[in-house]
Each structure stands twice: as structure tokens, then as C-alpha cells.
Length: 132
Image 1 (cartoon, rainbow, N blue to C red):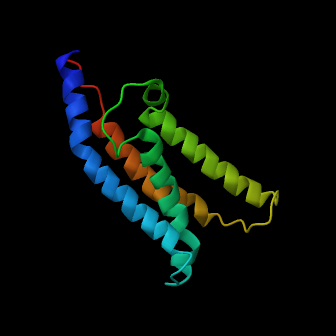
Image 2: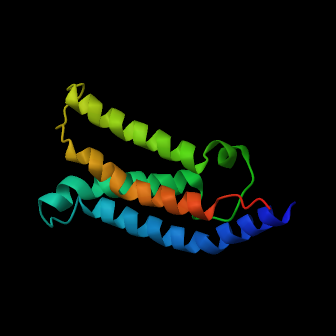
């Protein structure tokens, strides 16, 4: 194993507790929108913000010890980000087309991107391969 790969693994493992804390906070915030009413923004957008970011961390395995497997190789930062953004936009598009009983809100698109984009940027920056 090359030095830069060992450095990448060590950095991932050092950051894992912080990603785990972020995942817990996002999960609590998203779920609490069902039980706590803090107004329209809270009820309308917090779950749309927290859900995609929570899932991004989950699918990337950022909250756990490094694992070299086919899951990690498939769910690269860019691929995971693109998949989740596509799914979010498809959900909102289905609402726009009234394919199921839900209310289309164009602001949901911004809400989806508001936390998943910073999570992607932090992940991509911290997991970049330092080739020497």
C-alpha cells in the first residue's frame, strides 16, 4: 500500500466520528419535524435539507472505519452526489407532474442541495487522492 493511500485511510478514520455526529444531528433534526412545530420553514424544508445529507453520509460510509470494498469503489463522492441530486430532482419532478399525492414546491430543490452540496465538498476535499 502506498504512503498516500495510508494517509487517506488515516484521515478518513480520524474524520469518522465527526461525520457520525453530523449524521446523528441530521437524523434528529429531520425526524423531529414530525413531532416539533417550529414554523413553516421547519415543517416544510428541514427534512428536505437533512435527509439527502444524512443519506449521503450513510451511503459513503463516512461515519465508520475505512473499508476497501466494491461498495466504496462504486459510491465515490461525485457519483454519490449525482445519484442523490438526481433522485431528489426526480421526486420533485414527480410532484410537479402530479404522479402522486404531494405538493410541488420549487424551493424544495434548493433545500435538497443546501446541505448535501457542502457535505459533498467536504468529503471530496478530505478524500482526494494525494498522488506524489
